[in-house]
Length: 264
Image 1 (cartoon, one colour):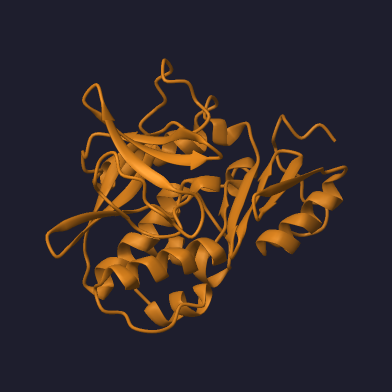
Image 2 (spheres, helix red, strand yellow):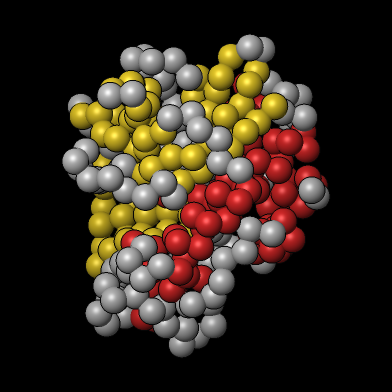
């Protein structure tokens, strides 16, 4: 793991001791610098979780990725720094009803520090964590962005975010570990199965100092200071321009993404 290259990519600096402060600073620097995105899926490019492939894409070529790429990279960073960390499997529930069962195609990270459990998740799109969360139930936790909490219902844990005055589900988990082979299988489904929502929607997201910028199909939304401004993207050329301007994602002129929701 080339930590210097990763630190240069994310702008991270300062102490690297295995502390909550380091974990928080790493998470914030990561989600501000490396955007969440699924563009290679829409370009029919395979998504490899090989170490060299992830480093080459997210660090060297300064692209983004989704949870398996993002949290695989963060997993290796934390391991290299000496953290006790384990990948945990989950189901993403953001904007999904409780009576719907989504696939178990998400991974986030459990970090043990001084006998306490903390969670980091730099790969859940517009809801990616900008700091670590302590695993304690029914307690609101402040973050640089939205308040968060964990609850337990029907034998399952739910990670929730407070949006306005409403708590919404982000992910569901049981604390089951997600070894490399399970991540490989789930990554294939996410990137290649025709019914995967990553094959049918264009997504990008990045945290800002005071908000977030998100792109979903033909709408880009800038949230700052409790206010949101949404614009409709009018052309493929404008889409490429906005990907570069807001997410640092550069593609050759004329690039077209195979997404049914892009009805230009």
